[in-house]
Image 1 (cartoon, rainbow, N blue to C red):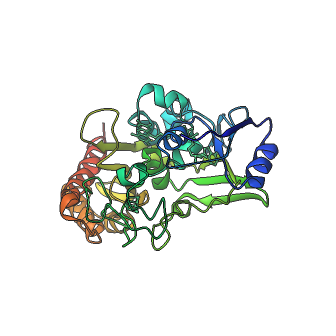
Image 2: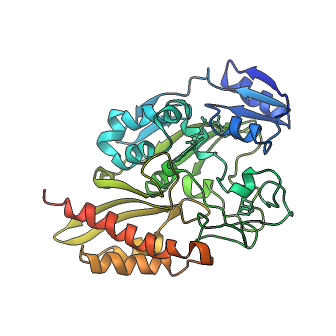
Length: 330
Ligand SMILES: Cc1cc2nc3c(=O)[nH]c(=O)nc-3n(C[C@H](O)[C@H](O)[C@H](O)COP(=O)(O)OP(=O)(O)OC[C@H]3O[C@@H](n4cnc5c(N)ncnc54)[C@H](O)[C@@H]3O)c2cc1C
Ligand code: SF4
């Protein structure tokens, strides 16, 4: 680990100005990703700008029923916030199924969206990796890729996006609020996560020095009946092999509306739009759920080691939707 300088920002504009001015600097929130990557020699910043004193840690209700989550709110606080538990259970469940209690107490919401991939070749700092060292190749392509993506892959990178929270937020059409040198931006969350394409080193559209200030979740009555299902190799402290964020509205046995997003299978948190289209107006039963899952997974491009994810994702989609549908009328 190389030495670096440390500064503690006193206000938002100061934090943005300092990081913008120093090309080799980065924001430091909870540090649960940033410090790991520095220790592993994957990141080598010259300056860390600590943003923990900035007033960005509130969880507030918005007029009209939405929610605003400050970028520095901790995962554990957000998971227990009343508005989240009552109106967006899928967010609470996604947060509580991530990391450990200690991590959730440290880790911030903004940092969670910007956490790096967990691909072991990216993190070993020596293997060829187009994300860490553009143009060097991708060791995962023919290497150990059991945990890698089957959707949204390119011939440059097949790493999955690891955030559970992001999957729930993508299902809910959240908006990422940012501030940078050129002012404020509102970025739809589906556009916030970039497919690897030819530029896997670029994971989101933030400019250097642009700070996430908050996440806004629009009012979504459908989300009162929502859930997050996470399938992983062990029951806690593990990233998803497959996960499903789902919300469904059923009227007279027919699916009136549905939200569906997948984690653990995509190079970005994966909004399952094909499946959603296939479900609307169909009877709320296993046949419809299975047909929609198959439709979504038609686009899968698995490797021999992660081909099992196609069937696992299919089953997880059906199970998540069936569990929500079974709750109707109770
Ligand atoms: C052992 C382990 C297990 C984990 N398991 C899970 C899991 O199951 N599910 C899951 O979703 N996550 C998991 N995580 C990831 C964890 O949730 C993230 O590390 C955490 O949310 C990052 O938040 P942080 O505040 O610590 O960010 P930091 O480490 O401080 O920062 C991470 C990155 O975000 C940038 N950043 C931080 N805040 C902002 C901001 N406001 N604006 C712009 N950029 C910003 C930093 O510059 C840095 O690049 C795990 C992590 C570990 C170490
Ligand atoms: S999958 Fe992506 S992150 Fe992993 S080695 Fe290949 S390029 Fe790097």
